[in-house]
Length: 456
Image 1 (tube, helix red, strand yellow):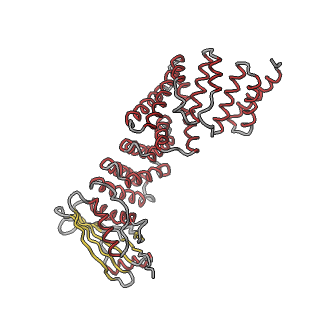
Image 2: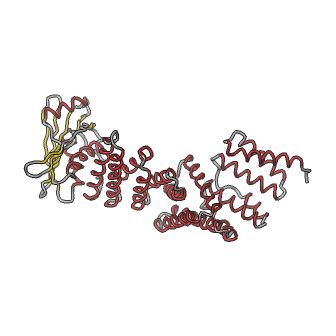
Image 3: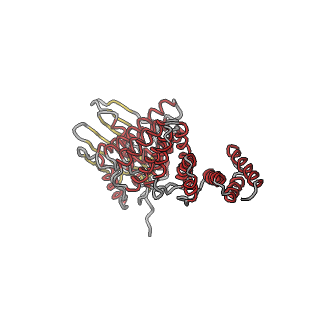
């Protein structure tokens, strides 16, 4: 005979305390308990109460919400189709803190179990697990295996306050935009503060990433980017934070900073093919800095890459790719200043062993142009004949590579090779976007010109 899985309606916990922080702690302790049982032997369903009153008691305490009696709690459970209901009250009297909890059987509105958990100084973060253990025992199920969300009370309080502001932002969404964004900004601040207090607080990072993912829709990308910048300073090994930071920087037009973040993310965790395409396109933009003599962007990129090297001495992959990024920024900086000799020296020493992605082809093409400009035709041909560091997954990069090969081959008199490469471009880009059609016309004109020339 099998026992039905218990289903519990969790009513937001009431609170009594000396300041408004008590309300957030009570409400979000209940929410955290629901999350803790997400994969547990019992199912917990939150009761959503939009209007949560705040009152002043005779003793001078602030009272947040209320603790419903067994009959009302059971009615909440029936509305959600649950077998049980759970209520609670968080009390902070200044000298001591307690959490009262009551488990009710819905079918007959009977109290099945009650407890008072005393919260020692500096140990609020342990209360969540203690409450989960008591509830599991009262229901006769196994305690969920979730870890303690943080290793100190300060981080846990910031986490709970951030969760509460996140709820506030949702409730304010249909009202004034400024009020919603102010609540989101406070949530960002609390989650970052939680990470500063405990860098291992995964729950704070997770909620920060969720807020960030919503930022484009909510219109606060710049604020989200600042929060992620702080988070990645605290946890530089978080590839997801680095990745989202890169995406946000693309959205707000910070190309060089986006490259740095995505490079860092890729070194920690391989990017998807689609993201590599996006990163390659960013490198195209980075190549334009030299042509536009944008030394400020190049200096910024070089400084950021140097900082990654400094912060990640224990992560060899990160350090090696950051070194490559800093070296390429130095070469482009020389190019932007008009020092082509120094730029060429910089490009020639970029290591192929580190350049394992297709966008490094752009650096190789720049090298070839500099060699041609210096009259080093044989070296330019040799550079073009070197095998690529990887396949070219994005069509514009593939066509660009073959077009440059065709131009070089024609310039040095390798006619058959030039014909083959120009034909490749004319065919590959025949239905491409209008922006690429001038290159198609160039390739076709070159094919006509070369076909009219006598063979040598």
